[in-house]
Image (cartoon, rainbow, N blue to C red; front, side, top):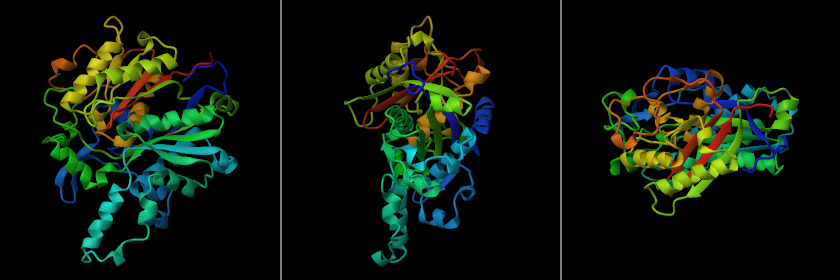
Length: 418
């Protein structure tokens, strides 16, 4: 992101709408749960897999959708609609007063359509696989742009909409796309972020289980434990986070509250393995974001890690962090998945949201569930188990990495007039 002085090129966050596991349906509640170290992971049961553990959201879709919309649509669509409305409300924006042709909707997703297809195949099995019982709603439910499209249908937005398929790097990618479209002048307001309905597909549980990467624990709240020696895999979660992004000029003109300014981003590809991460390219992605933000590594105050609780992934991300940041001035490093599990396409956007209040309160929320730190994860200045008051926070770097070797990093700056 080429940083320019013009308020037209400076892009800021003016609204946050989210739903996260543990009945965290607004930023204030979410932040409180992080500082109070309350997990949103719980027992969960899904077809064919049986009892397992997951991060489950608890929001009321009927707050913004009628029964028909919910029946015809998808869980991902309901998450997206809820978060988009909450973001607009939080930003103090009334869609009835805006030019809806100048609003863009850009949502990151891991995958879409699996839930709906699995459900239809199961329903069909109850009728001896007679395809006459296959719903005519299947096609619009399963097209990749569905979650963003449901937002436009619900809110009457006629500007561009699409989803960004970038595996678990997708939440950041939604933000990046919103920034790019605002800077190009294609839209005047971007609803950007990421969403996930992943816990409603048994396939993702079965796949991680077959890889030996599905977390297990007798206490669901302790199942997600990145960096801990006894971690044993990923906790799958649903969730969503949508931001309103505006040009600084426009935000200032209406006296908007500003959460932070997006000053840098990086996107790289590993080109080495479909699943195993590449710490060299992860580090390169962080370097690229720093370069675009015109920052030195020592200027970063907080790094929110992607770490999912897999043995190789956590270690390699720590290796990447150590290669970027000097031992003399390492940022404080934390992880949000330890609370909510892995919200897949929503992960980057949700985890960034949990850290934004640090600009105001000067506190770093910790990584929880670390009883025995893996020695391979030492030396990166991890904040463990207890919040850390550090005073002034100017820059937050948030990393998200995904399958097929896709990496994304965003850097948010505390807003000031300079």
